Image 1 (cartoon, rainbow, N blue to C red):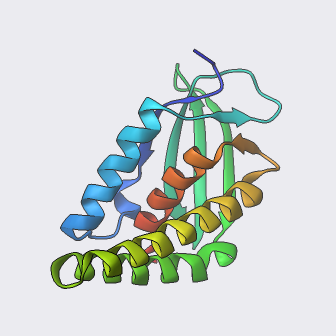
Image 2 (image 1 turned 180 degrees about the vertical axis):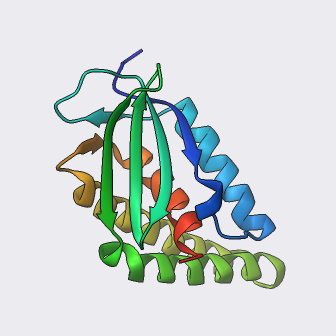
Length: 156
């Protein structure tokens, strides 16, 4: 296996917003999927595999990356302005999707789900670009990280 990967992802409990059952389920799935499969390169470093701790600090996303021994590799802060509208739109479309599952026709559910996936991909690409100076991540890793960023940002 590549050393350019995450072996663990930790969400700072103090940064987490209270979650609905659907939100908590999505967090757990994103964390599980990230640990199972990801591509995560810390540019200029070769100390992987890595442990990533995500938190919110003064309105910014903090990505604290450590090696297997617990030594900090880097701490990167990212302003949330580039993601704020996407997070809001994604939360709205997720609510619509979960409501549609209970009341809508299969074709309506599929249409909402396609929009949700499209927005999720767009947000993942924006996240990739915003982190590109420090980290190289693939789209699937960025999608899962975006899900976790949403979980952190809701409180702020």
